[in-house]
Length: 488
RNA sequence: GGCGCUAUCGUCUAACGGUUAGGACAGAGCCCUCUCAAGGCUUAAAUACGGGUUCGAUUCCCGUUAGCGCUACCA
Image 1 (cartoon, rainbow, N blue to C red):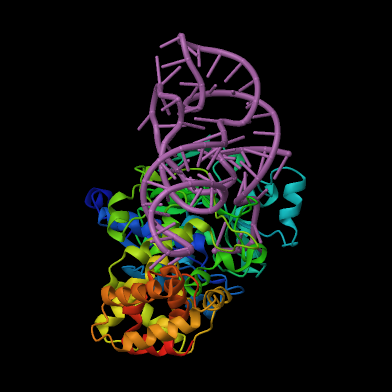
Image 2: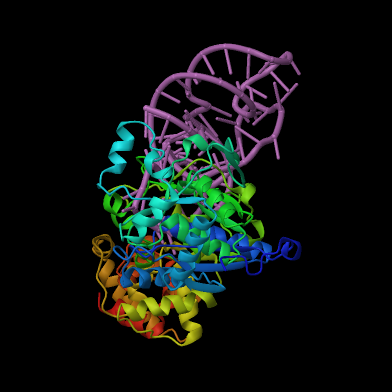
């Protein structure tokens, strides 16, 4: 039976919230899709509901295994989890049964019009396409006869234009929606090869899986009128709906791989060095707001604050450009999380990044964490630890031109070597005692302490900028610091 | 073309009839300072347009314009 299994209203009126995310595996995980998952997930977690992941893979032409892998990879990376998993291709029999049930009730008819391949073009040019009247009114006997003779047909929904003036539903984000049935065409349920269309497969699965709240992109808002009709034809109360504004490019166009390239793929942000949660946080702020000026929110705070009332209706622009492919706010948010999250949580991520970069960790765990803690305050991504922070983890590191300038200041190299010698005689090597040695030397030579301080940073890290030089000494450690200063 | 949806600083957004239209990112300047960040302070920056309704409209209604979506035997 189609979707009627556990659906006696009297019994399940207070049933648990069930939401779903239903991607079709035709490409990598799109950031807009990721956000749709996140909003569903947040809504489920906020309300104690179940999050269902359903792979809508009925389009065999375009589905790929690689895409499916990419979706799981992306979701896993973001740290998002689901409670139930289904594959639409396992459920084809169900879709057929649904189609048959609708047909048996007389709510659909066979359309034997041969496909010409340019239906869309024609309808756009010559006004609204509604139905082929000769097919809609075809006598049952003839329809049966032609079907029995093996003539291919499309099964179309018979939109009840005579019996009801319009289809309505209340959208949790966009408010009451209404559309005249005379503006809804007789859409296809089954293709001539017997395969279900998206509308049929999606609705019959939603019905069968007892999805009671559909949260999805606004590009489905107009489709929803058809879906309400399908649910009703299936003898079901339609679920509640909440549509989400779309993520668009700076030129206003819907984000697409073709036009906008890698900025639409979540893997791009992973590979760029984003923290999973920071990116989730960023996505949440596109089209939703906690309304209290908070920007940086933890996972828990997101779940607590999330409501559909907080979702707004205008499309949100992801702010990227040729020169700057990453939205600056995303980067800022990432830096905020990077700098404030517990070091214990950050350390493993940094370690993995160093591993990937082929760098070792010349510290014990405590030393590693304090080094990470010392340098993270001016980093933006995880990648920075292996690149800008390389000198903290390896002895072979490039000398930045800016750092070279500092070392080439008159007398700088000689004084740094002298400092190296003096530090060797300094058994304490605390930040304070190193500072004392350095300042004393500067005073003796009659130069500003800044000359040696900046020179030391340059010598120790190869960078003209970075944390307080004395913190650098502490992070690099006595032996390596003395060695590096001695070799300038 | 038809139908639907949307419209506040460059960008993300707050203000559910009464605010000097708020915050954040990005920008500019200053302070701090051993550099760079961070932080603090300051600054520039918006209600698409036109009509209503109202004592009063960012907010409600209508129109215009613009954008987006749907209009497939794609999802």
